[in-house]
Image (tube, rainbow, N blue to C red):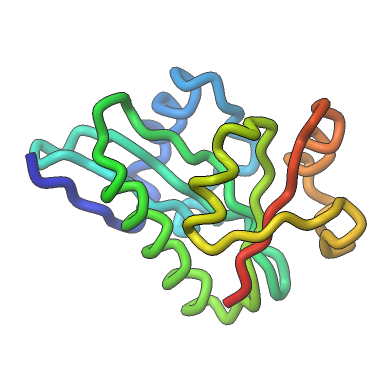
Length: 148
């Protein structure tokens, strides 16, 4: 099965919201204006198999909504991240951050080039994000940064 990664469009909003809801992820902040900061992974039949989004700030992006259905190749996840890095560069960003409470995922993210940072190192504008405020209240949440 050949997978396709593409930028989401306004027409994808409903389908992406359903996909994220099934994965028990929030869809706050997913709007007509923010949809083009999301990438979709689809199979050759156009069925949504994965997503990765970014909440955009002035110079930095906060990755969110990484979901892949079981059975997706690790290579496809790497390509999804690589495409997001390209999108962030295109938008003139200096770095990407992500938050996770799954320490088991750390080796994967470190392999991708992310480095752990302390909460105090997060850009101050992140604290205006509903998503970050939620993550800060989750026990054992970790933050990582990828410099562009």
